[in-house]
Amino acid sequence: MDIIGSTIGPLVAKMINIYYEEIGDYDSLNDKILNLIFKDINLKKYNKILIKPNVLGPYPPDRCATTHPKFLEWIIKYLLNEGVDRNKIIVGDSSGYSTKKSFEVSKIKEVCRKYNINCKPFEKDKVVKVNILDTKVILPKTVLESDLIINLPKLKTHILMKYTGAIKNLYGCIPGGLKPKLHGQYPKEYNFAELLVELYKVIGRNREMITIMDGIYGMEGNGPSNGNSINSKIVIASKDALAVDIFASYYIKYNPMDIITNKILINNGNHKKRDIWQENYKIIKLEENVKREVNFKEIDRIKFKKPDTYYLTSIMPPSIVKLIFSVMVQKPQINRKKCKKCKVCQYICPVEAISIDNLKIDLKKCINCYCCHEMCEFGAIDLKRRFLI
Ligand code: SF4
Ligand code: SF4
Image (cartoon, rainbow, N blue to C red; front, side, top):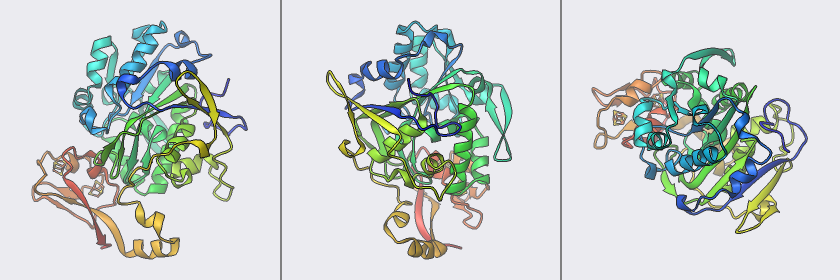
C-alpha cells in the first residue's frame, strides 16, 4: 500500500500511485478508479469524512469553474454503497463570498439534499487559529476534526498561479473574507505558493487525504472562473495531492515545474536541487477491462490555452521577461458594459483599490492579485497590459 499524504513531511523514497481514466462525460463515470483508490481502506473506520469540492463562486455547472454536481454525486453514492454512515459525511467549502449562494448555483447543495448529506459553508463553522508562515490563519473545526478528506479539485488554469488543482483547492478551507486578505499579504505568485504549500501541510497533518480530480470538463485560458470550458476527458486519483497536480499540469501541457507549488514540494524547498518530478510515480491507466502501467511519455496530453498572464514568462528568455515586467504588467479594468454593480469585487479587493460608484480601479493601490477577476461572476473585469505606474 502506498503512503497516504506522502508529500506531507519528508518526501519518502517510495513509489506513489497515480490512477487515471479517460472519461468523456459525467454519465460515463464508473467505480473502477474508486475501487482502486479506496482499495485497502476501510471507509467505515472514519469518524468524519470531509468531501471538499471546488465551489469557487456562484457559477452554474456548465461554466466549468466548480466541481460538477454529478462528480460529487458519484463519490457520495460510492461512500454510501460502501456502508459509510451518511451522518459521518460532510461536504464543505468556502467561496470568496456568499458560499450559500455558490452551493445552490453550482448545484452542489442539490446533490447534498438528495442524499441527505450535511453541506457546510465554512464561514458558518467554529474556527481554530493556526500559525502559517508567521501569520495567524483561522481554519474551520470541520476541517481539523475530519480524519479523512476527499479532495475533489477541478482541472483549470489560473491567471495568478498558472494552474489550479489539488493543493490550491485546499485554500477554499479558509473561511470567506480572510481569503482575499491573505491574498493581500501574499500577493505574488511565489509567496502565495509558499502559503498554499504550508496550508496543505497543516491541513494534511494528522488526517488522511485522497484526491480525485474532476477533469472531465476543465477550464482553459483565463481561469479559474473566466476562462473557457474544455472537454478534457480525464479523472485522476491519488493518495498524494502533489502527485495529482504533477500529473494534471503535465496532462494540460505545462512543465510541472512551472507550477510553483509543485516545485516547492518536489524539491522540499531546496531550489538548487535537481527536479526529480518524474521519478516518484507509478502511473496506472484504466482502460475498458484492464489497467496498465504507463510512463509520462505515453500519456496523450491535451493542450490547454494558457492564461494571458502566462506568455511572457514562458516564451521569452528570463532576462527579457524581467525587463518587460519592470515596465509592463496585466492590470484589471472594469468593463462598464458588462458590470452589474454587484460590488463583490469592491468587497473582496484586499487593498480597497476598487470603487464601483465611479467604476474605477486605483492602479497605484492594485497589487495584481487578480481576486476581482476571479470572483466577478459576470466576467466584467478585463485584463489590460499596461505600463507599470
Ligand atoms: S466588476 Fe463584476 S464583481 Fe465588480 S461590481 Fe461589476 S459585476 Fe460586480
Ligand atoms: S483591483 Fe483586483 S487585482 Fe488589484 S488588488 Fe484589487 S482585487 Fe487584486
